[in-house]
Image 1 (cartoon, rainbow over the protein chains, first blue to last red):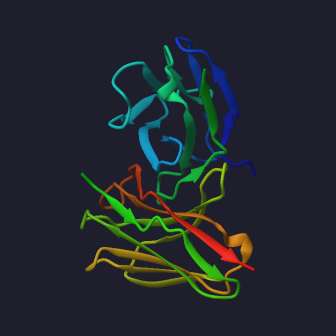
Image 2: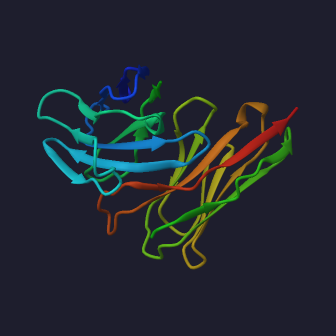
Amino acid sequence: NAGVMQNPRHLVRRRGQEARLRCSPMKGHSHVYWYRQLPEEGLKFMVYLQKENIIDESGMPKERFSAEFPKEGPSILRIQQVVRGDSAAYFCASSRGTGSDTQYFGPGTRLTVL
Amino acid sequence: QKEVEQNSGPLSVPEGAIASLNCTYSDRGSQSFFWYRQYSGKSPELIMFIYSNGDKEDGRFTAQLNKASQYVSLLIRDSQPSDSATYLCAVNSGYGGSQGNLIFGKGTKLSVKP
């Protein structure tokens, strides 16, 4: 009974490089959410996706950030041309959708930008 | 702007005491409320969810919801040192059972002293 899976768990990038974060939802879950937690800050919503659809991206920075959840494979959060301010923990959560809005979190990816 | 407010603490209680954590929310239309526990460096772990006014008990944990006062609380009975963590209050932004992202408070840091 695997939970939400994220990889990599730790990612180090230099300024200007690209970061790709992956998330596989729990079995039976079709809704994926990405959150960011800056050091000593609360969790902030970024984007909500279902298979092949972005439902709500109101929390996503307008530039350099993108997300997808293809028909096959994990959801991916992509950050282009990373800057030091992107250093944070990025958490993915999933929910079943129908009949339940309870979200379960993955272990997170800790991104460090040098 | 929907907001969730928590006292950041730290809240310190002796082992065996009751810890009381409080949360208020701004959107009167909110319908789903969650408490997560987050240990330092780890991901949020769901403790309880509550949808209806009143109390909901699960083991040593009791969630209380008062929609008229827009107030949610979490009581931890017989507190243990292992309960020392940051407790996050979250409200689902969706309405009428629809899915939505979670809006988090900044969390209350609980310390249980042996």
